[in-house]
Length: 138
Image (cartoon, rainbow, N blue to C red; front, side, top):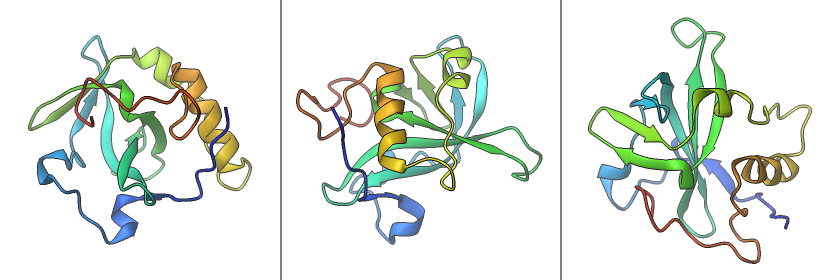
């Protein structure tokens, strides 16, 4: 169940905009399923080939963005969005245990496969993948 994520890129680096501006959740607080704040949406990772948002990039920790660590959360985990917050269906402990990504040490395709597996979702593009039927990024 492998994917090749070579077309994944940060929305902020793509020069593209979302078709529905209401889906641009960058800058909003991210809350876990218990309402604990986990950080802010730093960017969205898109599959440029299919023009779909696949991952939410959350920055947490650090001070004024310095020393912050990015977390990547599949859009399938987003269950609610308000004007100021993004709620996910996982606890902060579960998210903290997700595989970490260091582009100098980890192959990105391998990482994204491991990340989707950790969250219990088949990777996008893999046999059996079903786009989110609930949540914000259907």
